[in-house]
Structure formats: C-alpha cells, structure tokens
Amino acid sequence: MTQRRGPLAGLTVVELAGIGPAPYAAMLLAELGADVVRIDRPPAHGTPQVGLAGLDRSRPSVAVDLKTDEGVEVVRRLADAADVFIEGLRPGVTERLGLGPEVLLPRNPRLVYGRMTGWGQDGPLARRAGHDITYAAISGALHVSGPADQPMPPANLVADFGGGSLFLVMGVLAALHARERTGAGQVVDAAMVDGAASLTSMLHGMLAAGQWVDARRANVIDGGRPYYDTYACADGGHMAVGCLEPQFYEEFVRLLEVELEGGQDDREHWEQHRAAIAARFLTRSRAEWTAIFTDTDACVAPVLALSEVADHPHHRARDTFVDLGDGYRMPRVAPRFSATPPGEPTPGRAPGADTTAYLLEQGFDPEQVRDLLTAGVLHQA
Image (cartoon, rainbow, N blue to C red; front, side, top):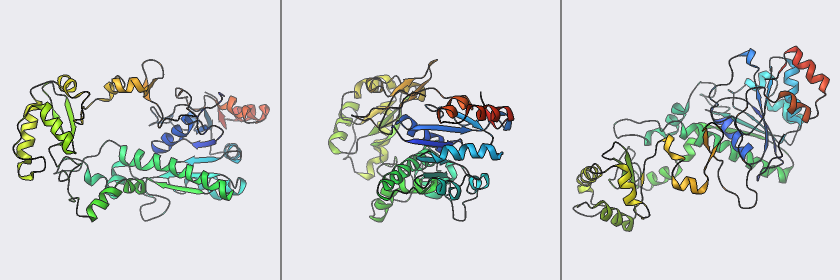
C-alpha cells in the first residue's frame, strides 16, 4: 500500500463498513494520513454497500464473511494490531458478531473503540431505527431550521455528519490523546443526537439570556431579520445576505442602491425593508449582483448549486476540490496543515478490491489467505 502522509500518519484504523456517518469519519481519518482499512461484506452475502457515494475514498477494502468464525477471527487479528476500531451498527450488533469491545479490548488494551449510532449505546431510544431528520428533531436542531410555519431538514448535514461523524472523529482523537497519558484505550460512544444537541449550544445560551426567541425566522441568524436572509434574482438564482454589523449593513444598502426607511434595527420597518430588498434583487441576475458585491465587505454571496461550487474562484485558488477522474470532483479533507500536509485523495475501492494484497501486507500467511478465499470466508473483487 502507498505510504501515508499527513498529521495522522502511522495511525492504524479498522473500519466495519456501514452507511453515512461512520464511513465519513473513517474517510476523514484516512485522508488525514491514517492507515484505514474498510471491512466490507462479500457481495454474495447481500447487495454491495450502499450510501457510500463519495465516502469510500482513500482506503483499501477487505471483504470478509462475518457470519463465519474464521472471518471474525480475521477482523480480530487486524484489530489486535490497530490503534482504532470504528463501527456504525446498532447497539449490540458487534457483540453478537463477536467483535464487541468486551472481546477486542482485552486482546488489545490500547485500542480506541469508536461507536457511531443515532441514539447512543443506551437510553430508551437506543435500539430504535432513525435517520438524520429524527435525530435532529429530538436534539432541537431541526426546530430552528426552515420557514416560520414549518421546520425543514437542511439535508443530512446536522445530525449525520455535523453531530455524528465530526464528533466521532473528535472523540477518537481525544481518546488517543488520553491513551498517551494512561496507556489504555477506551470506548467512544458517539451519538448523532448528542452531537446535534451540542451544535445548538450557542442558541441555548442566547435563549437563556433572552437573546433568542424559541421560534423560526424570529431571530438575528435564522432569517428573522431582512439583512440576514436569501433573496431571489431576476434569473431565478439567489443571493445570501448576512450584513449583521452596522458598517457592513451600510455597505450593503449603498451597493444595493435601495432606500430603506428607518435604521437597521427598526423592527417596525423590517417587513418593509424585506420587501424593498427583495424587489431590488429581482431587477438583476445573480451574476450581475455577484459582480457588484465581489471584493466588498457587504457580506453578500451567491447561493451556489453543488454542481457550481468547485468552479468558484476562491475554491480554485485554495484547491478545495480534487478531481478523482472522469470529472468526479470532491472536496478535499479539511483543515489545512503547515507542517504535515495530507496526501492526495484516491478513488473509492470496490468491496474486496484489496483483500489479498492488504492481508498479505499485514503478515497473514499466503496459504491461509488462499484457503479462506476458496472457502468463501474472504472475497477478492
């Protein structure tokens, strides 16, 4: 396998393949330099992994039948030599497979065992099914998103990835740091509902201080004020306006060339302001307004579609996106590092594409690998 680069070079991670947050967390660790291997199911034992579009990059795949004792032992052996084990299955599933922390940690006491679930490992909802929208709903994060009369999900960014993947990565890195002091690994219980709730911390603080109304589009950063909202343009595109500070607001009003009666925070004039701003934006295209507000501090930007983002001059200048072939462009890992920059992302691998090569590299006996392939315990794509 290619020598890894980045701040996490030298870290070894075993990932049980799943969908959504756990694969994204593993991808981030891999693209920050960790040696991550994804354990997939052989295609004969179910449909190929779904929901991995764009999340299966930068790490090899080993396909193992975990319904066999021999397959479970292969994964146990990989975990014996790993720093981190990541799984995103429902509570109790890895225990039934024989891959729970009560098995792996005694074999490798330094192992950090990262668990990614929606509701957490305990609590009355722990064994219930769910998705981003349900976790966001229970956390309060969904309540603050959308128009005044109805909460709307902001894709699956809040609970799955913001409250899930990123908190799992943070928890794993924190546990690795603790291991430097204690010498022992531990279990990291990352729940999307916990992480999504944590993301609302500032809003809870504002609510307690009387600075937040517990309703949508009634506050300073939820579209409640006309100078923090989105507006349609003549061509159907939209512009985002976020001029909170007075000096930025003055710049915005000057460049928009609109007359607004009263001051920025004259609440009684807000709807009048909103109507005037909306009418003015409808007089020009998104491109025209973008040209007007570029290189200003008015805090106005075009709302870009996913298909447009990679071509924005700022992203091009920072090389934010990478071409993985056939025009397949994806965001690079963030953040940036001055001394230990990560290597280039690599395209996703089919389940089992690296089974033989990876296991041999890890010291497995070639004859044993061949026998396990023949028996169907392993699968080589």
